Structures are given as C-alpha cells and as structure tokens.
Image (cartoon, rainbow, N blue to C red; front, side):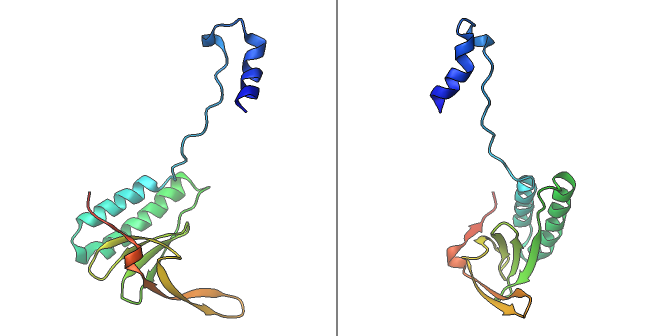
Amino acid sequence: MPQKYIRTFLTPTMSQPLSELPTPPQPPMHDVPPGEKVLSDAIARTLQAPPELRVALFSSLVKEVEAFIHATAPERPWTCTLYIGTDHSHIFRGGVGHSIVIDPQGRLWRARSYEDFDTTYSFTETTCTIATLKPLYEQMREYLPR
C-alpha cells in the first residue's frame, strides 16, 4: 500500500518541493463515544458521595448522560437499564456490553454485561427477558476515587 500511495501522490509532481505536495489523508482519530466524558464524570461524582447516597445520585446522573447524548449525538443513542441483583446490588446495564454495579455497600464496579454475571432468563412465546442477575465481583474491576 505505501508504494502505491507514494506513486499516486508523488509521480506527477516530482519536481515540486515537499511543502507543495498534497497532504495525504490522515487516519481517523480514535473514535471516542460522545458520552464517554460525561459518564466518566458521573462515575467520579458518585464516588465522591457517601456510599449510602450513591445509588440515588448515579441514577440521576445516568438520566443526564442519556439526555446529553440524545441532544448532542442522536445518531449514536446511549441507554442504560437498571436491574436489581440477587444480592440487592443496583446494576446499570448499558447497550454496548458494559455494566456499572453499585453493590450493597455502595462500592462501584465495572462489569462486562454477560461474562460477569450469572444470569437467568424468562421466556415466553415471543420474548426473552432477564429474570435474575447475580454479580460475580471477583471478575469485575472496582472503581476507586481519583
């Protein structure tokens, strides 16, 4: 690829100084999801709160993240569904394979939505829904204050 690329851009203009040659296209920058910073800020704010207030605070902040993303990047929707774990944890399950868990002691955990839970499902003729989620904390990463 580099040889063809050089031929395409340099062959017709070999006598031109390098500063006058067309700038080759740049690879795209790492595509950071639009809500990454606001979600990170929400996690940081929640970690600063007393453990007994974290579920209520994070629930509120998640709604703000959803509204922010809907307003700024409607083509990339972000949603979060709340589940209660078998241990009474609060599981904020996102649509991209990650979850944030607040355990009964108020600690925050980053989890993979499928691998880090023992999950049971309820089936009907037309639906399959989550019935229970048992967090597997030993597989998760705990969020700690910065």
